[in-house]
Length: 491
Image (cartoon, rainbow, N blue to C red; front, side, top):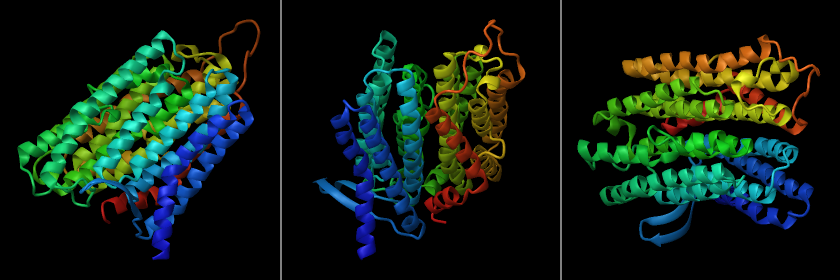
């Protein structure tokens, strides 16, 4: 009883810690060193608290706590289960690294409004942990919207015309999909199932026929706008106007991961995998996910701006997770969950590298990167590891997620999904390997002055080498993410 109570309190403390940090950071706005120290301490504390929950969850504990009852059956409540534990662990660990990177980036580029930046970052991470530990759809929806609102000031950080326009599109698509599609789906689910609590096997199983399930599933898939399923993906490339640490937050740590995490959570705990399979919902969802994977990859091939190429890569890679759900096989869902973690480490590495290149060399286009690997070897070596992770080549964690999803597709004879994975892997190689080739195998431009720059500030290099190493470490030691992913399915 004491251990259970301790775990419950630990779960609530984990959610509250980033919000406490957000309140403390402004107190030190006139002392940047103390402000950044508070940020790092908050991020480190969150990481340690999250790790503290890992052992009990792996041993079978499912800490939960009700915070507020709005009306009977509608509670603000938390419950830590394996899928949420995996998401929280990724977000909490990467916040530490992102904070280190942000200090180097924001100072080196003399960015304005740094206090606001760190406050919004902390609120965004608190919202992310709230999503991960939500016990029901109501709690998840509240923190999902808090994440949108807290990241809007980050997207519009530069406050120029382009940033304001991007922020407007960001809010329009993310709030619009939530209010017009996701919220009605949640209300309909409550009306049909009589509960919004996430339940193994699904709360809708046996309570609705094919037409209702098909409509509800479509409302959820497209209503979860953060998953960036086409054609509701435009906010993501537009948001690249933000500083690179924000791009890393959007693509690797919080926003898009909250989207695909929610898709997996809804499929497993609201609809039920067996229920979706028996009602024949795989085909159309495979087609939607597959179209997004291939189309976004083709668009990425045509992008010369490095961050935009990475943005379209993210849109494509996110739909691997949706594809893993669409296959509706236990092993493909395991792959989808593992791909959330693998993509996080690889993609944050790539954005860190892009920011380092901008900071040290003031370059933003792929066509400008000839020979840059000779001037920034640590950065481009890490970029190469991140790129291999996106393609799905060993020894990076990206291989594992793709392998499990492909295995599930072959087990269920879903040949469309098999084709999508094979073709998209070739496309991934097509838009990443030329960057690596340029960086290491082409001569740098001769401007008559010799090398004009070296590596970015050391905190940035430390961060990107750490995440690159993490991607490889996860390949050789996949035990924790694999265990959490399989426990999600009750195995």
